[in-house]
Length: 380
Image (cartoon, rainbow, N blue to C red; front, side, top):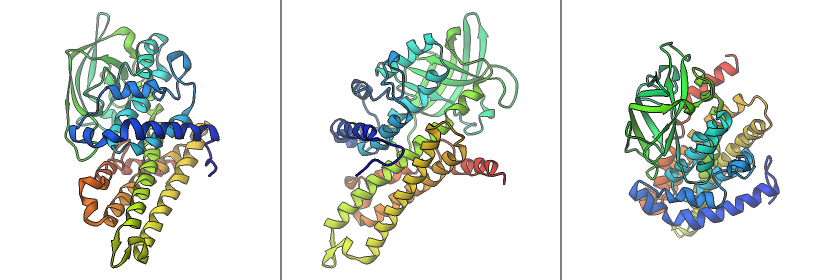
């Protein structure tokens, strides 16, 4: 089977390497880590040992010198690990926390944070969302007050992936009293007494630590200002397209895994004297799922190709994110139904996949936000 555009033979070789790693090092522990609602920090070191934490980063910082296509392969293949929370934790580190440092950081910041993050020595998190401000970043209330040598930060953050385990948080704060998008800055906060984080219980992504955070006079040195002061809104916008592509790619990978799992089950499970695939109604359900997976992949790969080539891909990326997230949840629900009672049991893991998929239409910008963006892009 030849590679699908925009991927090449080189990318497919990487895919095989990553899948072997995922199936050997991660998949056997998925159920254990889900039950513990945590996966060991050493997992990041294992990724780093294979070069998988820096696929798209420069070699001088320990990266592999690749690009977004190499990272896209990793995102898709993580669907085979058996835990949406594990995939989310690794993805938050490589695709949400470190990109702003790679793009806007000083050389000093890259040496102190990006290089050890690629090496699996430091774990990062992005801290933007607050209890009263999600997609409406203009409503952020956490603030930083200027002091001698830096800033003192006070406030709170919510729904922060890797928030409990992180060694540093790339954090959006208000640095002026101006309203709206003005006066936002990004500071890199180190783990310290002034930062507390507690895990939040949630429907899915159990192996991932999602934190409620509080900053109480947390100190940030001058050299940890990321980008320009009071221009943090541009940093927020800069990674949105990639983050949403990552979610689309993850959904495509998860749907493919669920489809393959369900086909295998339907072929070996007998009902009324023949396999489930011997019943037309069930065959047609599987055909519908296969079609949904293919369409989702085509839409996502098209957006990925446009994004990688540097064109204006806001419309296509937004459509890919919108199209794949609800589709993924619907596919999981149908796969669960086709498993019958077994699908509702933890043993077959379809119930876990359904729970994990439900975040898709919410995270990275809700379906409603995606539709509003499209309304503007389409001049409606």
